[in-house]
Image (tube, rainbow, N blue to C red; front, side, top):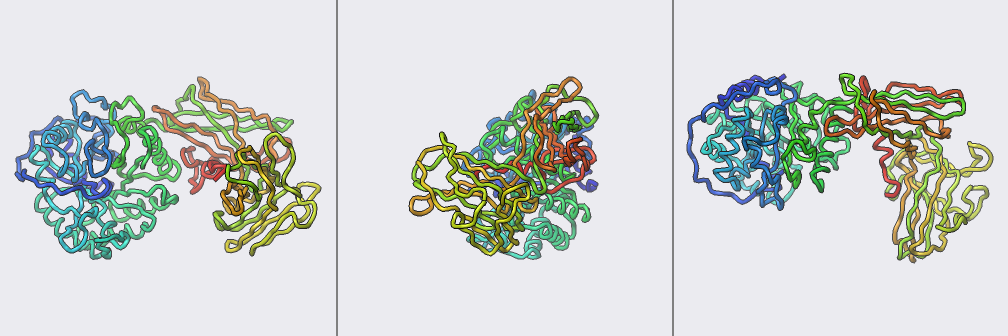
Amino acid sequence: MMTLRLAAVLTSVLLGWGSAMPSSSGSTGRMSGQPPTASVSENPRSTSPEPGPARTSAAAEPTTRPLTWFAPLPAHTPHMGYGGSVDYDDLWAPDAPWTTAQEHVQVFRIYSSWVMNYATADQLRRLVGGVRERGLALALEIGILSDSVGCGTGIEGFDFGLEPFWRIEAAGGHVDIVVFDESWAFASERFDTPNACRWPTDEIARRTVPFIRQLREYAPDIVIGDTEPLWTDVSPEALLEWADAYAAATGEPLDFLHVDIDWEGRPDWPTLVRQIEEGTRERGIEFGLIYNGGHATSDAEWVDRALQRAFTYEELHGGRPDHVVLQSWMDHPDRTLPESDPTTFTGFIDRYFAPRTRIGATITRDPAGHLALTASLATADGTPIEDAPLTARMLPVGAARQVLRMSGQVPEDARAAIVGIRVNTEGAEPGRTDLRIYRVRFTVAGSTTDLVRNGRFTRRGPDWHISGSGRASIVSSDIGDGRMLRLRAARDEDLFVDHPAFAVTPGSAYTLEVRTGIGTRSVGTAYAAVMWLRGTEVGRDRLPLAPQPVELPSRLTDALGTATFEPALVPDATRYLLTVGYVGSADHWPAYVERPLEMGGRRGAVDRGVSRVTDAGHSLGAPATDRGPREAYSRPVSW
């Protein structure tokens, strides 16, 4: 539920009053460190600007959920080493092409470092006037700690002061919402660099009190919230402990807490963020999540990544943030306009609010063993989506038996090769392992000769050298006549399996094939490899011993939103995970549905279990899973 103070501020802004002055945003750290300090000649306490026109759309109601924040990076930010959106100032032109996106946004967020160091008086006047005319609340991101205590100089979160507020007032504006700029994280022991303060949480909270007192004297009803990072060494408990310490020190809780995620460093981020969301709600604090595309190399990639992360949290993991913060302090997007372009920042806003989609799937199997899959795509209200490309794949699961293949080229500096298998070592993730290896085969282009001797494990002898603390044995095959190599290891055990070296020709093409049976728990714990030698090892190509999906040709939906796949195969595994996906468009969210299949003999497939969502989509009524098959089957064939 929205805090009373935040609701009151938004109501006053929407009515054109604009006197509640909260929030300050100066991402001096997320804007890549402290810029040079600028002197401020403007220090007036101007009167409130004339009321702007009230905004009346439903999206502008102060109780709207999620509350949407828009925070592009300004074009001129020299201390970052790159600029932001080149058309940042164009957002406030009378006919700026983001009418639809405007109706979704309630808060515009700016950075105090930009206000104090780079924004001209004219730019600020245009911005605060444009924000007011569009009925938006103005948020300022700023540090709340002082660097006059022997530490903190040049560190994010240490730009204590009211000067940015005065400068915004001089331009005819008011700050409505203050956002702390990760002051807790950068002042804590987690940030260990020269001149870092490394204070305990209670000490950081105590040192915020002077700024909060000044802020309350300046604007008693200002809304105050925080943004903090989810770094690899930051836990949900630590963030919630900080929120509690702040409330104890200042005598008031945060109005909101926004989370800035280390996407690459925290692959478990959805689960952790859900814990933070639940913890803030228990404390009466509004929860927000920043969606961005990280350090992408293009606007299109940035938008796609940001949208993917929104799908993951809201559709897979059932997250329901009170605030959605669409923010960049990165090199992209380069453009905010027009919203008709799905790769711009305002185009991203429209895509986030586009209709969400649902996929249905029906599977049958004829007497010959061939499968038929009929999939349907519609919006959440049931409207069919025509001419939409659907993809489908079947991933073997359980004790999946497959022939895994890897093709490549012999390195120019290699003269020999060893084919081997590694379990729980040399880059394989530790875990419980149970693998069955039925055949290993290595061939070069233009030849059918298998350079692996005894690749079917039909005899004992020096053909394979096996060592390590795990268990390896050559036993009767469990899929018919012949023998197999069985590899078993506990999490703290390892195995090394090596074939004697053989000569190779630099630059020649090769193929490695491994027929294997892989238990579900063994995925990620082992790989086959070609180790290239020139006296010593000069390189290694890895083939993960993990199920690889059977890809089906994509299909377009018809006028009823349906598409039919007819894979011409008789599956050789007994259990599969079927995934049907839609990548989405500028007008619709993506969707993925995941369905387990039990292949119960030749009379038909038994479809057991309900549909489940995967990492990027939604199936109505679906239970969330922490790791969908897209993560498993998207692993590259060669690491």
